Amino acid sequence: MQNVFIIGSKGIPAAYGGYETFVDKLTEYHRNNDKIKYHVACKGEENKEYIYHNARCFMIKVPDIGPAQAIYYDVAALKECCRYIEKKQVKQPVIYILACRIGPFIRHYVRKIHKLGGKVYVNPDGHEWMRQKWNACVRKYWKISEQMMVKNADLLICDSKNIEQYIKKEYEKYYPKTTFIAYGTEIRKSQMADSDEKLKK
Image (cartoon, rainbow, N blue to C red; front, side):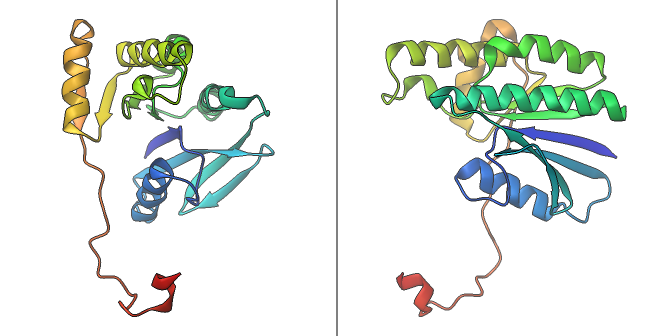
């Protein structure tokens, strides 16, 4: 059985944005697959576990430290993954990190995961370092963090061909291994009628 640990979404069931919906659907579609087991980090107010779509969801308690919460959360989740893998002697685990928030810390954990027989995959997301909502110092951190995540990842899973091309060109010196997997969408016919009152709310 392949164990996959997912870090970087706020958790499932999805109640936030794209990453959460992606993880929710990924676990839903694979919930009856006995060849894969998902372990999903979820942001919470206490450290506990629950099962959702047959995935093991483990909550990480995050202190109220402002914008740095996301970085703390990802590092704490990664640390917990390593603890669990070591304790349960999980064979050949895959750690899948959504976004590039923890670059300055990643090398230490990648080395540890490799020693445990695992691999680290990263979804590099978009150009977080270019977003004007961040000040210059924060944007510089995001850029450095992205660089370090790309340098240390075993595989970069890009959901945009433009992002994949950017990663290959911008970080050519690291010879990044990339693959492109497009975000999906529902292809099943909706059970809701066009005239349903819920659509008008």
